Every structure is written in structure tokens, then in C-alpha cells.
Length: 208
Image 1 (tube, helix red, strand yellow):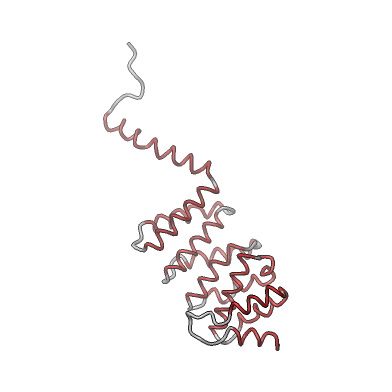
Image 2 (cartoon, helix red, strand yellow; image 1 turned 45 degrees about the vertical axis):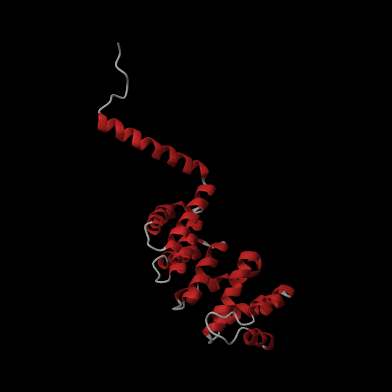
């Protein structure tokens, strides 16, 4: 408890835009990775700023050393996923795709990401769709929903959503180049087919 209190003190104070002494906490954990459990425990703290900063650090570690955070990953699918703080939701949706989940857990992950695509805050929406797109590479049935929402984002007035949609499309194309090539060839054929129908030109030359 004394060690956890040290982390709590370092993560306290300031406002929502401040990270307090998060770099110090990070350095302490990097020296002793076992202390990550103390950080994870602070996601249940009564101070929402402490929770926000603890979760922010967990997400950062999940990107760099997911094996450290793996034992504590259920924090990302727990009650915090329903937080009224957009900063916490952003950390949740960015962290979810970084782990392997059981089938039951993955249904919860899909539910969280899908619902946050319609959240009020733009960055939460953008990264929720990004996470769902990552999941769709393993769960093909999610692809139609992802493509539909990508089209919505591309038509959005938000430049942030448009930019994220472009980045997602590029990543999906890189992950499945064969499919992208087939779609491109199909798209290229459509104007030619429409032109033939308009002009009434025959598909085959007349025999002499």
C-alpha cells in the first residue's frame, strides 16, 4: 500500500490536461516491471484524474510491452469503458486492439468499439473505428460495418475523421493487397461497362 501511495501522489494534482509526474512513475516501473500491478490498481482510485493518468500509462506500456500489461488487460473492458470522460474512453479504444482476447471477451471488445464510433468526441470516434478495423483483419464479418463507417467518415466535415479514414484504408490495403487489387480492377471495369450500355455498342465485332 505504501508503494501504491507513492504512485498515487505522483499522479495527483493539476487539471485534465496535465499528466502530473507520469514520467517519474513510468521510469520507476521500467526499472521494476512488477510494480505495474500497483499502477493497474489505481484505475479504481476515487480521483478521476489519477484513474485517467494510470490508464494513460497502461495504454503506453501496452503499445511498447504488451506482455507487461496482459495480466491487467481486463481493466480495458471493465466499467471504465462506460466513463463519461472522453480521455478515458480514448485510452480504452486505443488499447483494446493491442491484446488477444477470448471469444467472450472479444464480443465485449467489439461492443465497446462499435458504440464509441458514435461517441460525441471526435478523437474517440476516430480511434474506435481504427480499433474495429484492426479487429476486422481477424474477424472478417466485421468488414462490412468497417467499410460502411469508413465511407461515413470520408463524407464527414471533420478533417480528423477524414484523415483517420484514409489511414485506415491504407492499412487495410497493405494488409490485404490481393483484395484491394481485385476491387481496383472491378472499379476500373465499371465505367467501360456503363459506356457500352449507353452507346449500345456491341460487345463483339460483327462478322464479315
